[in-house]
Length: 211
Image 1 (tube, rainbow, N blue to C red):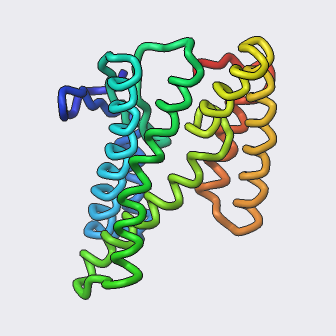
Image 2: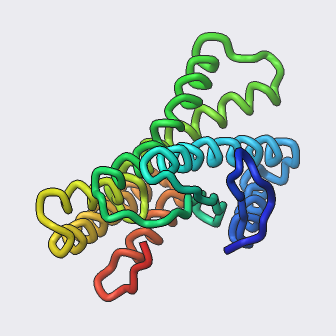
């Protein structure tokens, strides 16, 4: 899945065509400012890797196995062997946001307490703070296949069993994704509305699921 772009701490990192397309689109989002686009892409890649290595660490800790990271059009994913233990799945799901909270707190603190005077460095700090705070919160929404959705499904499985937990988690995902779309449109946030729409479509009844 995707092309191999590097290996860090023994973990393969791959990227799909959708991820490279996403990087290119930011050139237009920043009004064709090449420097700002480059800064954003660097901040995004660093943030995604920090998040995904949280999952990688949890997989090694809980399952004693290796995993790989794939960067794609909507972010990143940690590929690893599955486990039937819902407690381990919850830990693996939430370790990514836990890792991402660290740069979120650090860069938000820098911006609020001692923002750099140099424009490009200041932009990097702002983008790192926004990505790692906003994406952390977004990723905790109980929508499959976000981390919050996986954690919810595993928690429901502990109480109801897998047969009842999965359809209930998907119903919650549909409701929450529809809410994200509605709020994003109300606040004129087309990118978030697009992401919410894709998540809503993936969780509609009758869709073949792979997560």
